[in-house]
Image 1 (tube, rainbow, N blue to C red):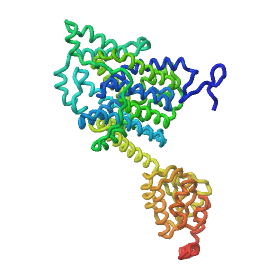
Image 2 (image 1 turned 45 degrees about the vertical axis):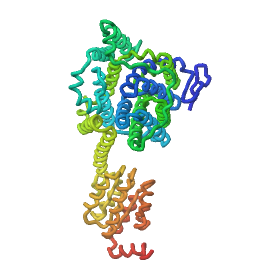
Image 3 (image 1 turned 90 degrees about the horizontal axis):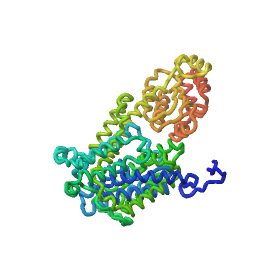
Image 4 (image 1 turned 120 degrees about the horizontal axis):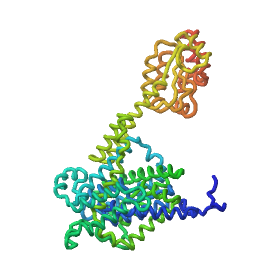
Length: 584
C-alpha cells in the first residue's frame, strides 16, 4: 500500500490514530466549526437528559476526545446525540425514581457499563455485524427515538418541567401542560425553532443556526421579554443556572444489588445503540471522504470515550452525523480535528461556563425538539408503503413499540419478524432449485449424453438435483420433492451446484437417501465438494453407500444406474450384501 506523502514527496508525519500534519489547517478549522455546533447541542442534550448542562458539556468533551484518540474513523465527531439522550433520559428517570439519593450516580455507572460493552464488542470483532439490520427496523427505531425526543420536549417547550412517566406521562399530562403554558417561554421556543428552520443558507456558512438561536434567544429573554422593572419576567423564565468551572469530579462506579440487573440491561442497550449510531455515522463519513473506517477499532474508541465520560459525570455519546459532516465540509480529514474540537470545548467550559447561566431552558428545548424532528426518517415514511407494504408495517410496528413500549423489544421484535419474512421468501425462492426428473425433457442443465441416459432409463432412473444455498427453510422442499417420487429403481442425488448445505437440509438429504435405500433402490450421491462433502461425511452418509456410488461424476452415476436396470432385484441385493457384509 502506498504511503501518504506531502507535496514535497516526504512521508507525512503520522501520529496516533491517523493524525496528520498534512491537513493541519483543515483539521483545526473543522475542529473549531464542530465545537461551535457542539456547544448548544451539548447544553440542550445535557438538560434534556436530566443530568444537567455540565454533564452534556463534559460528555461532548470526553467522548469526543477519546473516540478521536482511539477510534477507527479519522473524521468522526463524537458527542451526545439525540438517540443516546433519549435512552439516557429514561435511565436517569428510572434510577432516580427508585433511589433518589444514588440514582444519578448509578446512571453514570450505566454510562461506564455501556462503554465496557462497546469495548467488548470491538475486541470480539462484532463491528461488522452491528449495523446488519433491515433498513425498515433501523428507520422505525430512529423515527421512534425522534418522536420520543419531540414528545419529551413538549413540557420544557411550554415552560414547564418534563412530567413523570416519560412519553406516556407527557401524553397524559398534555391538557395540564397546555393550560399552564408560559407565554414568554413559548415565545422563546418558537423563535428558536423559527431560527433553526428559516436561517438562510448563506448565513449558515458563517455561523451554525444552533449557535445563532442560542445567542438570540438568550438576548431576547434578557431584553424584550424582561419585566417593566427589568427583573420580574426574567425571574419567571427558567434558565440553565451556573455551571461549575474547573475540571469535573471523579464519579466512582456505584452499584445497588436491587438495581444491578436493570443497570446491566440499560448498559447493554445504551452500548448497542451507541454502536449503531456511531457506525452508521462512520458509513456517512466514508461516503463523503471515500475512505473506509475500521469498525472494530471505532467501537473500542467509542467505548473508552463513554467509560471515561461516565467516570467524570458526563452523559453517553456516539458518532454525531451533523458534527461529522460539518467537520469534513470545513476541511477536517484526520483525527486531529476531533482532538482540537474537544480541547476547544474544554477551554470554553473552564473559562466561560459562567456565561451559560442565563441561557433559557426553553431555547434548549427548541433546539432538542428540532433534533428530534430531524431524526425522524420522513423521507422513508412517505415512501415505505409504496416500496413494500410488509416493510412499511414492520416500520410502523417498530415505531409504536419504540415510543410506547421498550427500545429493546422494538428492535428485537422488528428484527425477528423481518428475518422470518426474509427467510420465508428466500426459502420459497430457493425451493425452486430442488428438482427431480426422470426424462431428458426436463428443464435441468444437462449434457446431451446425460439426457440420453435418462431417456434410456425409461422412467426408472431419477435425477434429484439441488442447486445453490440449501438453507434450513429448503429442507421442507427436499422432503416434499422426495415424497413425490413415484416408482423407480435408481436415484441419483446431484449436489454439484450446491454452494452451501445447512445442517437441516443435510439431514433432509440423509433422510431421503436412507428412505430410498430402504425401498431397495440404487442410490448415488454425486458432485458434493468442499464443506458440503465434509458435512455429509460427518453425518456418516457415505458410509451407507458403496464407494462407487459416491465417487463418480453425474454422467458416470447415470450410466451405472441405467446399466443396473438389467440386473434383477435379487442380484442387486446380493451385490450390495457382498459390498457390505453383515457385521462388517
